Image 1 (cartoon, helix red, strand yellow):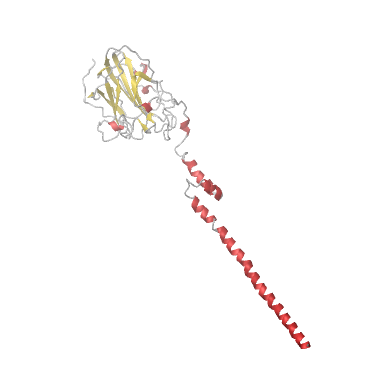
Image 2 (cartoon, rainbow, N blue to C red):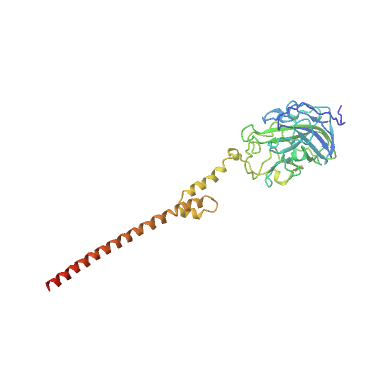
Length: 349
């Protein structure tokens, strides 16, 4: 028999691995459902193989008796923490675990027994990278109200108003991209919640399968995030029409290439350091043309300028000094000869 009564008992068997986390609680219109309807993972370790059946609802999970009642159009909040504690004294997920937050739903016959690998999942919420603030969905900075760590692990989304009533699984997922520059480096943290949706809608959205929705080489999965990103493509299908994206810059982009993976944070620094070395070795004329950004140019130019005047001022005086010394000597000899001639003439007279 399905039970909708909240239960305050939390599973405390999560491994205390630094930075890893689990989606553990659910709120409906700000009413805490604690862990009543979550298929709690047995570990806070991530899934890294996108082809694994564990990509559906995490490893070692199975249906539970608890259910959470929801009305289409209501606000639902999923909550993540590293450990069993709900205290906000530590980050919900390690600060280095940058990446998108995604929420899926799947209609099932009985949420307490449904096999998540056969379900068809449609995306109802996504929040990725805000290029304007260079902030990820899990960021600790409070500049974006929907950031995961800034809100004590909570993420809000609206259940689509047009979906048909019945049992559903909600799949909350956080993807950590801090090691996603290499194959199988992305880390996937997900949990599934069992809910019953009430309403008058009739829509039965198409969905994707887990595993199968992601490929290891997807642009949003195999990526080097340690660079300036103009855009980020959130993995998975397009957002369902009745869902919502967490901020305009965080939606699906248009880039499909994974070339940024080959770049490293150190590469941009090398071209910056190279120009000063080349310019300093050039002639003074070139230095003067491009001396604005480089502080070393003035020290190079003064060393070369004084050397030229030093040689030009010492060489010219040597010639004038020798010339006057020769002129007086020749003049005295001529005067002595004239004197002797005059004396001889006087003697003859």
